Image 1 (tube, rainbow, N blue to C red):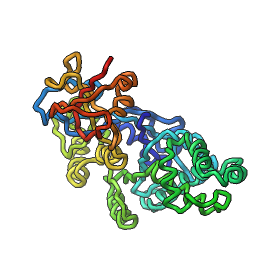
Image 2: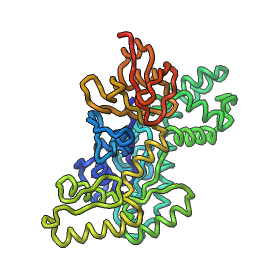
Image 3: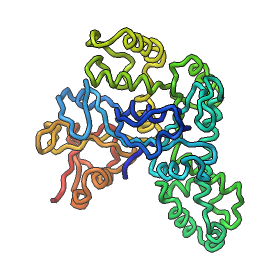
Image 4: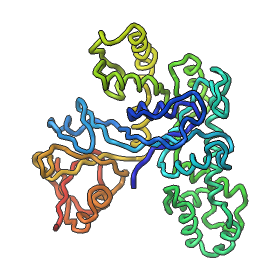
Length: 403
């Protein structure tokens, strides 16, 4: 199943700019609310130290990129229409937003940390809004959306019909929520966590339903807060306040600065590797005074102060910390670390931590290969691996099959 990062937030908070920066796409950016009507899609990348460094090899990537010893692995990013209060009831672009959102595995909430937008995304001037209110309302809207799916139409009858059959109730819950990429295991874990596992469903009250919805949303679609527009002075002040108020990790970010540097890098005016805290100007004669001043400001007020723009950092955090993904390189030749065409370390895949070798083969390589699986080989140690071997981060493996 495809891993998708959803970008959410109020209209005009910088969602499309973040997408453009992360993917070098050209989604329309405008000060007017609801510029994004249809979901914008892009391919972003997570950044890791490539195995070519460890093995002192020159690689030939096929499904990813290697830049100066860093491997950039593609991920899907989805920027959906801006969310306003009442979206779960269809207000604004709510219905479309939530339908698009159902495909995401984790959400990046892009917050205008300058507080320049009201609750509907209309500009009211910096400092006019408290960013913490944006965070509260968005989480509440998504929680209520989960609740509305649970309670749709026949909820009362649904509860009563299966009151004595716990397993059937769980299966029905899973069917009802399957469009949200929620597993039975997640449902069971939340039921047990809230003490609802042994409670007769017909006795669930409104609070039970809401608590179940909130907690299921937290584990199935975790929300990571991105404090965008951190280059503004008031943004920096609000960011510090927000960290204190929430007591959780908030990612300072300037999506616009990242976009500017990636564009200049693409045009070979500067040399910049996404996620780095510095860049080098290589064609200064192509920049005017205003552009040079912009780059100077980015360097001093963002890169040096926050050790980067935040875009690459938060993507890496979402994939490796929040979603527990690891990296695995399949090869055909364990001596040369190559595929059958002699491409060195050609592919690297993201897979959930704890995945078994045979499951990896079936999910990421080919189901037929999994059917005829005999054993695997650890390319680094040359040891044989069984089908239930638990993969480790940066494993390089060869698959031996009967066909």
